[in-house]
Amino acid sequence: MNLNMERLPFQNGERILFQGDSITDVGRRRNVMYDLGNGYVSMIRGLISALRPDLSVEILNRGNSGDRTTELLQRWQQDCLDLHPDWLSIYIGVNDVWRKRTERQGGQRHVPLPEYVTNYRRLLDQARDAGIRNLVLVSPTFIDKYLNSDLNQLIAEYDHAVQGLAQEYGALYVPLRQRLQEVLLRNPEIEWLGDGCHPTPAGHAFIAATWLETVIKGRQ
Image 1: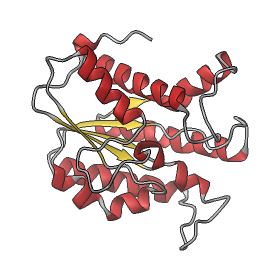
Image 2: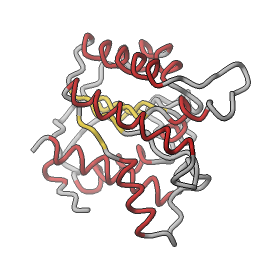
Image 3: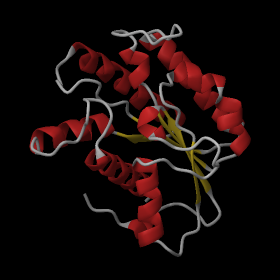
């Protein structure tokens, strides 16, 4: 993976917002506006700061652990639209699928694929209507450490839907599930996923690099 950071498409003063679930959240402090958590968002911030010190961009993390597209819609106004980002990255879908196996306390249930697509389209429509033009859609990734499990096969369908939405809305698509599958097979001795779903530090570094590579290549 070759990151030519000189080709980053961001402009000075732009705001980049990351949205998602626990994989994006990673322990961020809700009461601190610019806290980025301890995962891939923080690593992206670090890489930009270290390799492009001339580039002054604002990065926000609004990932919430446990969220599905349903919860994302409920907080979309205050946690996205009111923040007026120039770039919006969405990484959501694991919990929509995971609840098929285990419902969460409080009634969280599985979100079937047609409903997931409807929810996602509403998120994107509202973002477009609010003037957000730069969209980055990250494919939902694995749930189990067994790549051929029933849920991992199901999430592949959700990934395909996200790819279609990216094409429909002119968004950048980050093929993270495919790339992660390749690296899991190529380097099985490295622990990329701590529990089959939540990335280790190595996994978060891989997400950060894949995200940056997609953004760089997508705007050349």
